[in-house]
Length: 346
Ligand SMILES: [Ca+2]
Ligand SMILES: [Ca+2]
Ligand SMILES: [Ca+2]
Ligand SMILES: [Zn+2]
Image (cartoon, rainbow, N blue to C red):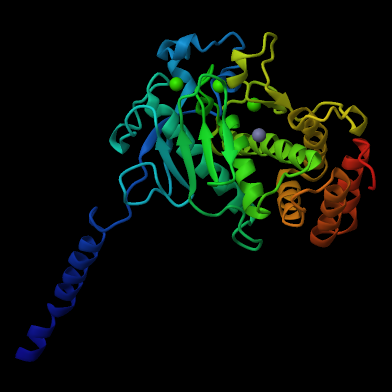
């Protein structure tokens, strides 16, 4: 009997000890850090408000109403304490570095706001590609920490530099990194370069690069709007509704569109202008097959593009990719989208 009486409390005691051990494991010091909630634009404030009369007003905080910011989690941060993580690493040459403790309070007037926007939207873009299967059942597409630098420039001048594989955002007019569609456009170049090193050495390849950046910007913004329940009050096809208020006089303000009627016959020999021929084809593939299927085909096909590809060769590769991944009907829809643009050889 003594043995038995000693054994009776053993079960609960052991359970209590286990509970303490689990509580220790779940303590804040050992658990994964909670992602900080940052203030960001819902793609951009013109898109989220529909207000085409918004202006930069020399970077004034008051130029954009409070209700055009949203709180969203900064995911995938590393332990550095800065805006650095699995898919993005942000450095700034203007102003002090953003503090994670303050990311919920910055306004567009703060230099740190653009740093936060750059981190959030580069991460968002790579998460979108991951959600399509790139880095899963399909090869990764720039699935690494993308270096991003914010510079002071007199003019609008964001670009991707393939020498350092770094994205740089300028501050001309509306600060470039205040518009998610500018951020993701540049990220599109980084994706292309990761898929095909040195991509874009011919005029038509360069145009495809600009087109994909615009198209990816629209796609990532639309996906984020759907995920977070953010309003989209401008045309889906309008790229950089906010950045472009500084250099377009008529509403709706768009840097470019992905739904123009341009065809191959409209080529003018400038990559951004000619990119609208290609981006319309991508937009039509999306219309025919839906965003997910279209984007899996479009991005997967890009692995097979030569650095100096032509519209004809890239279109042919994209049709073949659709055929391989989804069969005859998908291939026919892709072929039609390129044929409608008058692209030769399809
Ligand atoms: Ca700003
Ligand atoms: Ca700008
Ligand atoms: Ca837009
Ligand atoms: Zn570009």
